[in-house]
Image (cartoon, rainbow, N blue to C red; front, side):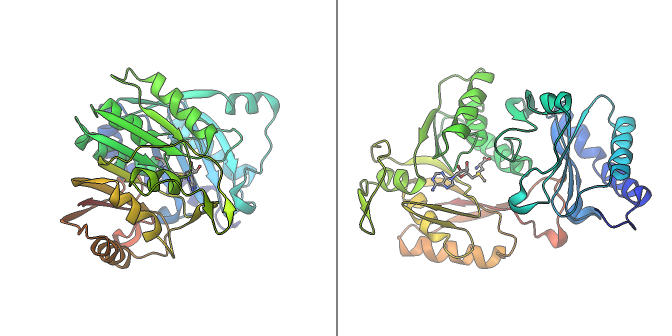
Length: 344
Ligand SMILES: C[S@@+](CC[C@H](N)C(=O)[O-])C[C@H]1O[C@@H](n2cnc3c(N)ncnc32)[C@H](O)[C@@H]1O
């Protein structure tokens, strides 16, 4: 349980302060046709491990360190019923190992939680679901700043979206006038949501959805061919891809993941992904790299990117940080999610 000292009153005070600080942002987001945003970011707003997000008609409350007591949950729901009326509350306690959702729900509430819903962000429709076989509700809200930037730049461009998950970045680009979009992820279930996202929007063309290991796709797109054997093991067959480069590449890997082709490791080996992604970015193009490992300091990471770029003879010409928006405040302007826009 949350510490007893965190009785309902200080909890409500923290929620109220967070809501006050978002008044201008929420007004802006509503005007921009956005109804998905974070209302409370506990790690910075007084209660580490508690987040409250609005996903359209859903109010998603999540705990990552300790569960809320029934009294705390009731007070929280009551606060939002008064200040954000009409939202359907859903509590996912993810304080158990591997952030799995632990709290069972009565059948009727579970059915509501498992309903697919549509949210809007910057005029784009996305599918979300409060509960399903996975853990997150299909749209990462802190990445809005990245999607917004891609939408600003995408007109008439080709875009490669790596570790695409439910393809939010690719759908945003296609909606904003990109010429061609390729989404790559090895999870068929995530790409299925991506296809649904494409259907939800009146896109001028159909983006591509490639179910593949990113290492395999990048090798082929960079013209290095398909590795059939790695460390003496036969590799699973992934779709053959022609070598080609893209005006924009979006690289947003998970913190750590193993695959037959290699290890995604944002702390110890970002260059293993960065270098081939750079080779798939057209000269004069833009590569947006993300790193959400909090322990990686952004200056050290940028230094590593600059060295890796020089090694493959594609030096970074310009760089700019994309900061998460004001619903994801951070300590000392050092957000865990770092997004570097590189002109290469
Ligand atoms: C944190 S999500 C990425 C979020 C995404 N960029 C977005 O816009 O929401 C990580 C994704 O990486 C995928 N993934 C992990 N390792 C992979 C690999 N080696 N090849 C392809 N996809 C991989 C997972 O299936 C998952 O969908």
